Length: 322
Image (tube, rainbow, N blue to C red; front, side):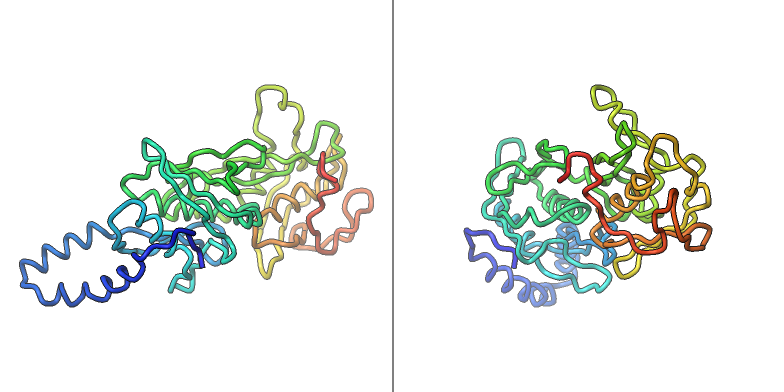
């Protein structure tokens, strides 16, 4: 259960009110029915969840009963902790993660302080969880920006900088293209190791997140101005095309054309392979990657690297990792 330490008595009132509303509406005349129906429609909000593949956020209609902004925050957090009735959706909030306190600042700013278990969320799972919370709570009229703290300290991004205040438009939904944060791995300047890069890519639901990640790898790192400009370079051979990518039972199956087998000057073979593997395994639903070329499994890659089996995350090849 997702709890706030300062528990309130509004939960009992909420249950009683929800049970009572149908009888009140039924007992009114036609004119009152229309008026009440209009009020109810205006009060319909959304609770955000993730789809079962954990690739995007989705929502269900919800009618809150609380009135004050403090009680609405508690009510929405309680709703977010419950599994949705729709089997194509699931909650993004783990049972062990709790909000220890929440407080409002000036100008519609809300800060949520999570316990240390929030740190167990990583990669796309953390981004989607954060998205469901921000998009749900942003429906409260007095809430414009939301900040996450963990044990009283600002939530940090992969670049070790505070994520800061967020708003609803920062995250994806199922109706229009938005930006989603992903961690990509490219070759470092020497081509002998990988470096990670936290990027925002446009996601509209028409292509899988796996496709978008691989296409970004094929395109190469974005140009960065400043001292980091030369720290990353393309890790995928020119002319490589993604023919097919599917994920099943935690394994992502990636089929490239034969250009993927071409030796890329100045980049070691392991760096090429694990730039794909490590980037995909950042997704919560993927644990391993299996490659094929034009639909066929190849015995070796490059200078004799076994290429038939399943590949797992390899952090030893990442620059700066132990």
